[in-house]
Length: 243
Image 1 (cartoon, one colour):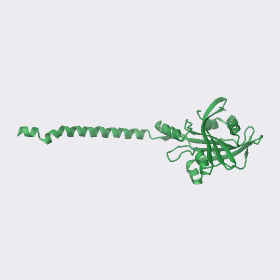
Image 2 (cartoon, rainbow, N blue to C red):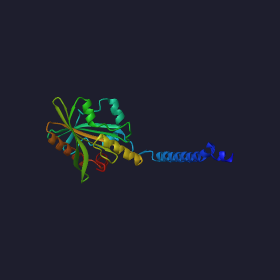
Image 3 (cartoon, one colour):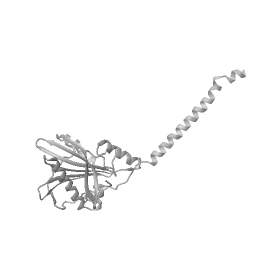
Image 4 (cartoon, helix red, strand yellow):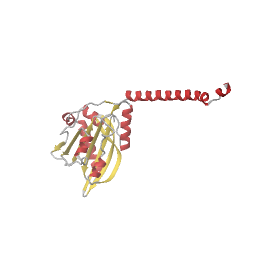
């Protein structure tokens, strides 16, 4: 009888039950630790909200040889509801200089970048507006900001609709990063979240209607350099950040 008791399934399974129970406890403890870490690392808003007036004041209406025209032909997200959801602030202006060069300018901003609220890359807007995208490539933009040479990682796009040939230069700033593609934009958002904060997001877009691509690039580079030279530190931080 004693031998039978020693070899019974009940006795054999007892160590197994104790091992399984310890494993469950360890797994449960690990899950609790991960949950606690997630709560502790829940991203917080780092950048304050701005009023429309504060945001608009960052960008001078006139500077150097540039003046604002009363109308703008900028291409926006195809639905106004979409634009309202994507951005807290959208500023659109058309500037012209004494040589007759016109630059269409857009700045769109969110103090928080969330998974369902992201900067809209211009290629999507133009394509949705019926344009063909004949060029879309990364372009490092050298400018001067507060007397220092700055390289802004930007993107160059050529969009065509009929006889309208629009050369576009834009960049996105996510926190302190300047992603040049949708993928790197997502990576920048994830990086900020891992570091414990919600990054702000800025889209700066300039465009010139001209078939001469290189001249358009020079015109837009000169335009943004002049704007930064005639703006304060808050504008330079907003536009060029830590580029």
